[in-house]
Length: 342
Image (cartoon, rainbow, N blue to C red):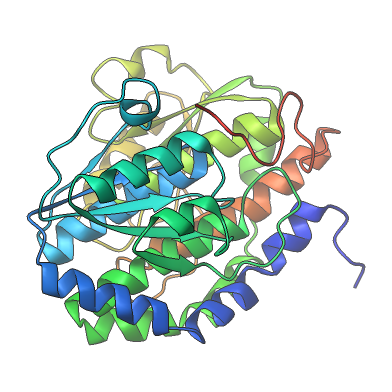
C-alpha cells in the first residue's frame, strides 16, 4: 500500500497510536481528577479557540451529563483585552490549547488561577506558557502535528478531558470504553464516506448537524470544511436547524449529520429524514434513518466515545475531498499552524 500523500493524512493515521500513548501515561490525569474531587466545584469554565473550543464544547456536555457540573465558555478577551475579574471561587477552569502559546488563552488561565479557580491545562506542549500558569497540566501526547489542520491534537484533547472526567467520576464503564478506543479509531480511519464528497460536488455551502456531545463534532467538521476545502459550512444543533436555517435548504442541498448512540439519536435522525424529505441530500451516522442516507460508522459501545470515532471518519473523508479538489489541506490559504491572539 502506498503511503498517504499529505501530512494531514499521515497524522489522521497516527491518531490511534497517539491515543494509546495518552492512555499509557495516566498519572497527571489521576492527579487532576483527585484535585477536582476534593474541590467538588460548583461550576466549571473553559477557555479555548478554534478546534480546541470545539473540544471544550464536547467536554461541557460530558461534565453536565455525568458529573452534574455546569460549564460555561469564557471569552479570552475578558482577561486579555478587558482586564475583568471573575468570581471563580470553587470553580474548575479547563484551558485547552495545542500549542499553549496564545497570549489571550494564557492570560485568562493566569487570572482564573488568581481569581480562585483550580486550573487545568490540556496541551500538546507541557513546557508552554499555558502549562506554567496552570495548577495541573495534561499532556495530550499527540506528538508533532505539522499540518495546519488539527486532527491528532483535537482527538487527544477530547480524550484527555474525557479521561479526566471518567477518573473524577470514577466511572468504570467509561474508563473501559476509553481504553478500547485505539483499535476502534483505527477502524474509523478506514470507513468509506466518499459518497458525502460526491454529493457535495460543486456545491459551495452545506450544513453539518449534531446534538449533545455530537454537536461539538459537527462544529469541528464545519470548521474543517472551511479550512481544508474552502467550503462555506455551517454547524447547527439539530434542534435549531428548523428555527430559520432550513429556509435555505433546496433540492440537493448537502447536509451531514453526526449521530451517536445516545438519547438524542432518534431526535436527530427524525430531523435528518425531514430535511431529506424537503429535497436535501442528507447523510447520517445512524441505522435508524428511513429517508436520509445512512453512513458507515464505528460504534464504541458507549455514547460518550461514539462522537470520537465519528470525527476520525470525517477527517479521513475531508482530507480526501480536499485533495480531490486540488487543495493542499496541509497549508490552507491565509492560515498558519499556531495563531496567537491578544
